[in-house]
Image 1 (cartoon, rainbow, N blue to C red):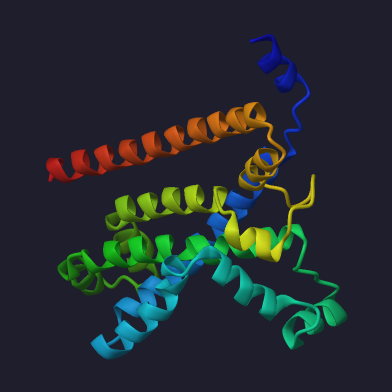
Image 2 (image 1 turned 180 degrees about the vertical axis):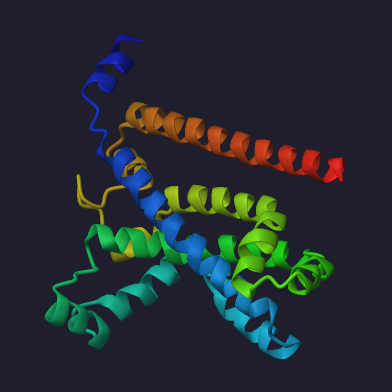
Length: 234
């Protein structure tokens, strides 16, 4: 116990803050992009929907290191896009916190998109038609009818997206590296201390992740129970 307390007192908490900041920013990006993409895809025909859906879901089925490799090729300063961003705007993606955000966003995006799409597809179109007959604009219908109706699915997708972004390791390691205090996340910290044979520190970080995961799952279950209660009232 004394050893555990000693480790906790001298623990560098930067991986936790980096992971939380990365997860939060990535979730915000995925939230808006996922809802936008899901809404557009739902309105497409079966053929186009299948192709676009396959492209947008691809990061979910590919190994994270493969996604990280593609991102590295895309944003490296030796490549056209990476060179352009750095030369024109001074934006460096590789081995930066921005790289952490992009890697986590690419990996977590399919979860937000799939949940949002499923939620939109289950909306009763009669509600939308009723809004139109009342003279509501499409924007107002979306925010007043579509989003509240799809709320439970959107909430679940948001929570899962945050959880996935928080625990991302493979793509982040490829694109952002493992720079202490800058890009080193919890997952990278656990892998690093295990390689050093420090299983006690790895266990402490693992316990921290377990607590965060439990809170996330509890929040998702709470959101699901509220949606069931809301449906039962109707």
